[in-house]
Length: 273
Image 1 (cartoon, rainbow, N blue to C red):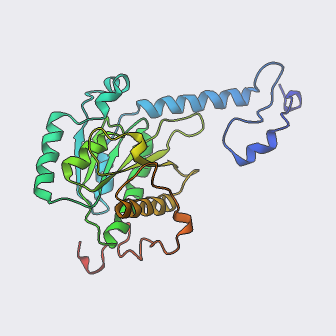
Image 2: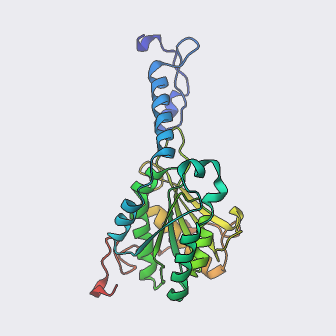
Image 3: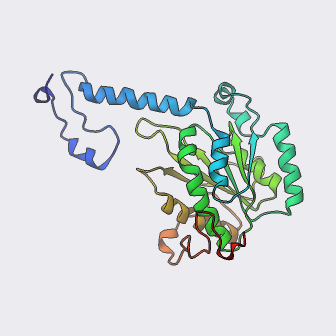
């Protein structure tokens, strides 16, 4: 069936501005074959994103390449199947991980911030985007004099697992970088959830979220600027969540990575790291 037989949708011009499925046209009562095949492909990509095994070792190596110590731990969900069926188990650590982080927190003396990386519902997003974003944000904070905890990579983790990690490491606030639920237009979107004074029992209303971080969405640089701003305000106001507003675009002078004194490559002036 040729293009001349497709009945065009008058909203088709909007497709140049969005990846959403608008203005697809129709052939009789059906979608055009090309649109149907694209839907099936994106649906397969979304399913693959959810079920792709998390390469925790590879993720840790990518983060360590920027000069950061990385600890790999596990949630209480023993497998991907359990993780998908029991969200509650992904929100807490298993006993061995809890013990190891508790010992590390007791010897660390406390931290201004902790970063947690968890696979969430898209390991692909974490594989592709977690290390470069984390390196940029942590570099800026360290350049500002913050004490950043070792990065914790959690296998089969959900957002709330960061509350337990942050509490065990004695961190003032925790930022969880996690693979977001894939949609039919984006399967590799990364989200960041920030919580001040983390501890088990915190609610979503007590967090700030930065979402849609991927090549066609929010850039690493814009995500870094937003996260650093929110973390600075969280420290000043001693809170996160609905009471903390993102007003970073109205604030001039947020430091670049270089101005903060350290590049995302892991280099520090005078090699003082």
